[in-house]
Length: 102
Image (cartoon, rainbow, N blue to C red; front, side, top):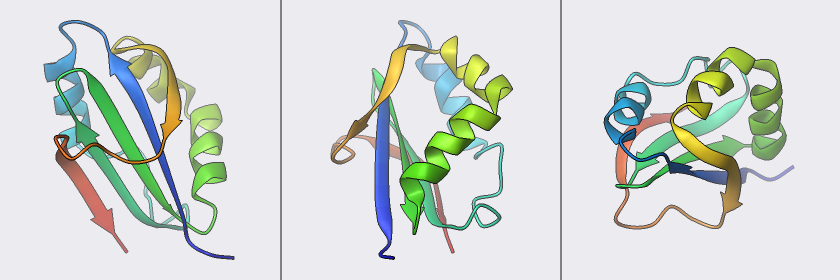
């Protein structure tokens, strides 16, 4: 199975950028290595947050995390509007706040 790159984006609610920045700089509330990921990163623009998952089953790992970590998901629901959506790439103007590599 090839390494997969799964990128999701969510639009920030007005006035929530600083809170999202603090959350992302603190790193994920899980151990990426324990989940079998080979890379995980978080990026921020003025109005969107981007999460990158890399590994053999990156998409299914990200979806499983969203189902299993409801407390973390609920905290983010206060910062983003709507549901996260898969995107092709992180835009070049996004600032990387967290980057982990195996």
